Amino acid sequence: MALNSAPYVLFLAAAAVLHRLVREAWRSGLLLAISWLFYLLCAPRAFPLLLLTTAWTFVLGRVLARRTKKRRLWLALGLTVNLGALFLFKYLGFFASLLSALLGWLGLAPLTVPALLLPVGISFYTFLVCGYLMDVYRGRRPAEERFWQFALFVSFFPAILSGPIERSTSLLPQLQARPRANGDDVKTGVTRFLTGLAKKMILADQLAVVVNTAYAAPENFTGVQLLAAALAYSLQIYCDFSAYSDMAVGSARLFGVRLTENFDAPYLARSVQEFWRKWHISLSSWFRDYLYFPLGGSRRGTWRRYLNVLIVFAVSGLWHGAAGTFLVWGLLNGLYQVLGGLLTPARTRVRARLGVREDAKPLRWAQTLLTFLLITVTWVFFRAGSMDEALSILRRIVTLAGGVFPLGLGALGLGRKRLLALLLAVLVLFAGDVWAKRRRWAARLCASVWPRYAVWAALILLIAVLGAYGAGYDPQEFAYFKF
Image (cartoon, rainbow, N blue to C red; front, side, top):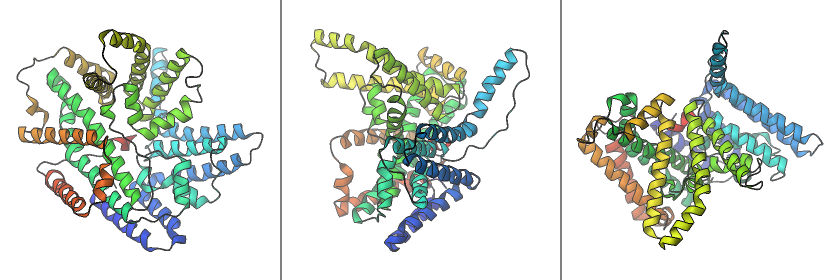
C-alpha cells in the first residue's frame, strides 16, 4: 500500500480519526495495531521477520541495561544478528556472485544460493534497532520495559517503509507520552502530506518518464539527451524521496508525532560535504554517530579522517543496493569530500589573491552549480543497471555523441507542452527551496485560514489534473522502497 495511493489515504484518514477518538490509555495499543495491520497489508510474508527482530532487540536491550561485564559481547551479538539478517536477505546473492566469479576464475564450480525476497523496510528498521541497542549500551537512554511500546517504536507505520530512520532518544519519548493530534498538528500534517503527494505525482513521476526512456536504451540517444536525462534523474530522486519524507512527516503529525526532517534544500549546498548534511539527514547522521565517530572520526589525524570518510560512504553505497554501481556511487561521494578537503588551502589562497569574499553571491552560485553537477555524475552510477552502462552514458555525455543540434528532447517521452510544464514546476520547486530557507512558510501558511484552504484546493486540483487523472499518467513506485 504505497503512500501515494487512494487506499493509503483512506487508511490514514480512518486511523487518524479513530486514534483521536479513543481514550488516552488505548492510544499506544491502537497505534501499534494500526502499524502492524499496515505492514501486513504491505508485506504479509515479511511480518514474522519484523516480529522476530522486534522481540530479539527488546530482550537484548533489557540485557544491556543490566550493565553486566559481558555487555560488549551482548551488544556485538545483537548487532551481528540484526545486521546478519539484513545481509542474508539483501547481500547474500551479491557476495555469492562475487565468490562464484572467483571460483570460476580458479576453474572451480560456481556457487549457487537461493533467491530470497527482500523484506519491505528491512534496511530502515534494521538501522533503527541497531541504533537503539547502541544508545542503550552507551547510556543515552534506558531500555524500554514494555514490549508493546518498543514494538510501536520499531513498526510505527509512517516511517517503517522508507524512514526517516528515527532515534530512540527522539521517537520513543513521544510515543510513551501517548500523544494526540491537536489543531496545529492536523493543519501541518495535511499541508505536508498534500505537498509531498503533489511533488511525487506532478514532478517525480513526470521526470521518471524522461529518465526511464533514456536509461532503457541509452545507446539510442545523443549525449545532450542523456545529459538532460541525467539532470532529470537528479531532480527525480530528490522529488521522489523528499515527497515520501513529506508524506511520512505529515502522516505522523496526524497522530501528534513529529518525525525527523530528512531534507533541507540539498541542491542549494555549496559543497558535497554540505550536500550530505542536507540530504537524507536521518541516514547521514546515523552513519556519523554510529560508524564515523566509532571509527575515530577526525580525532586521529587528517589521513585517518579521510579513510573514515571513504569507509562510511562505501558502506552507505552498499546500504542502498547490493551492486558495484552503488559501491562506486558511495566511494565517489566520499572521494569528492576528500579532494575538497585537500584542495581547501589552495582555494583559500586563490580567493585571497583575487580579492573574492567567501560570501560573494557569484561565488556561492558557482559553487552550488558545481556541486549539483558533481552530484549528478554520481547519480548516473546510482541509476544505471551496470557499470558498463554508467560509463557508456558518461562517455556519450562528455563526447557529445550524436551532436548538439537539434536538441531532440521530445524523444525522451514527453511532448513539448508537458516538458515546458515540467520545467515550470521544477522552477517553482527551486524557488520554494530558496524561499523556505528564509521563511518558515508552513507555519505561516497553517496560521492563516483562507490561504491554507486555497493552497490545499490548488494542490488537490493539480494532483487531479496533472497526476491521477492527467493524460498518460504512469504512477511510479517510490524509489527508496527497493532499498
